[in-house]
Length: 114
Image: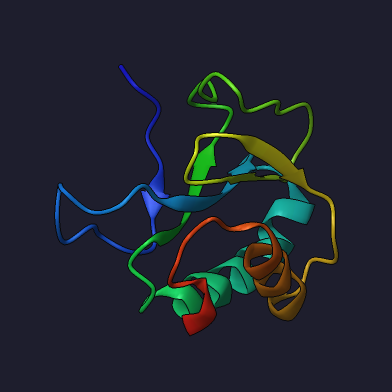
């Protein structure tokens, strides 16, 4: 079965433009993961109105990360551009820093709505 991401926004159209995604890989028993969860939910709320940007999370102990996602510890945040290229997020673990990272790296035309 394909990996299951818990998305913070549901796509409204199957024909929508390619998405930019911030994906958090976590382990349920990880204290750092639990500490990041509220901040990550706030990030999801911040991007909710931007159709081409998705914030998702995956329990990496119950699912294998998809190809291109190098997960070696928890939590791991990986940013996927609309082109499919992935890059790790190693910045500060606060909403403003993550939003700035998305703005700087997204290929989405509507990233200015953040």
